[in-house]
Length: 590
Image (tube, rainbow, N blue to C red; front, side, top):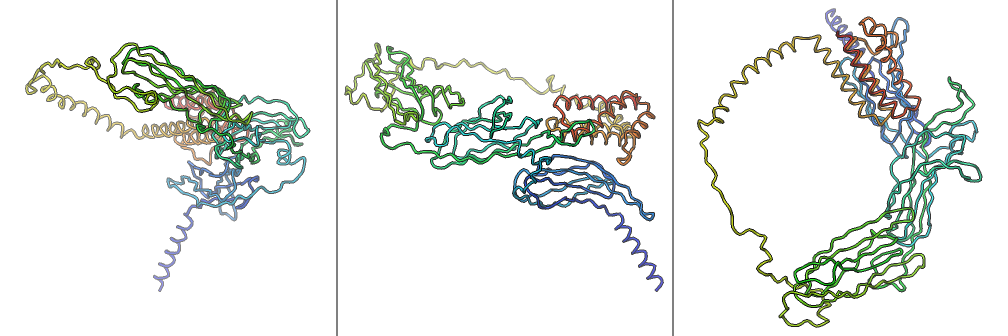
């Protein structure tokens, strides 16, 4: 019985030890349901000191703060408890149910992951109408407006849509990022470049500054009520408050997502009364002409016949009329060309079809007149333009001995087969100049002996390589150094890819610096402090200037979470980190 009791006690102690050795790594949310205009706090908390933390992508949210790293050591009745937390502040970008996916961290050489957590984002919730409340000040002082040039256009009539940002003078806009692109269903759209210069104007009876963020020219392709979807942007703004920060400023810098209202355009049908039979959908104000490159030529020579439409309107959205020629003229498929620019008022320029025409017989051939119809939305009428008849005079060539064509036959579109002559294909070679290929014997040739001796030349190279490989493997300290260098280069290369994303860049850069120190100085993450780092680097005889540069990089990573940084500053910090790590590596290993 005693033996059984001992065995039970041992099993219990082993089981308790396993439970005590388990690692806790979980995701904690400030709330699981929130409005689209609220913020979410997310904590990734672990009870062991971990490294190489990787956050999830946060689909459906925008990171407005973090990561903020914090650690806690608590002693209670002789028992020590430890926790390490990475905190993020998120702003929803849309309504719906989203999943905070798994985060990863390395603890004692093992990789741990959190469980996914779902969050429900509902419509915007009411905010207090307090003049000292930041959200209220923003909602009253910033407006994203969709301006539409025409609310009742005809089908294929141009409509200009401008997205303008109106801001009260007391609010400072530091930066903005479009959240996706505006969608225009049932419209042909063209983006127009704008100069984002702030101007002063009056909006809702008050003085505002405004800038045009985006402008599009739309051509409706479907009649009836058509929706212009809202457009959203993320703003980094400074809002005045009554509180002073540590620098004495009375501005609070925040991120805010604002969205324009949905607009509806009522697209009218083109009138049926007076619509020409050859109308193909051209809407605007146009000119029309048919020209030829020459009017007189010999048989088997070619000319160019061009149909061209120029002016203002939907030039890219209709077909040109076809050119009909007598059957005695050989006609090739037309070559289309366009020179069209899109401005605020719509498309303007010209489009054309160029036909290559080759007459086979002597004679005079008419190119019949061609008509082109379009709808003028200004006068609300259809107009038809007609070209003049053109006579092509073929002065020299064979006479067509076939049955004479009547004038009616000349207006048909059937093509005459090309009559061949003995000189038409004289550019083809009919005699070949072939030369005999000299035959050589590979066996006992120089190439044969060279290939035979090459393997023997590799034997000393292989022996030298194996010797160097053995020395490389036995260099334990050198391998540790090389591993540290590869790890630092890995994270610095990842930081280089994030140069256009400030928050991601400084997060990856800080991780690279920490991992480099862990490998070089055998220091744990919980011991990271500026004083400790300076002390260890000084003991390793690193120059004071280099230490100062390294500490400066760590401070840049910390400040970048709360203050804006320019592209120039980000690039300088990256270059400085490469140089500083290189200098530390040289000075430690000298």
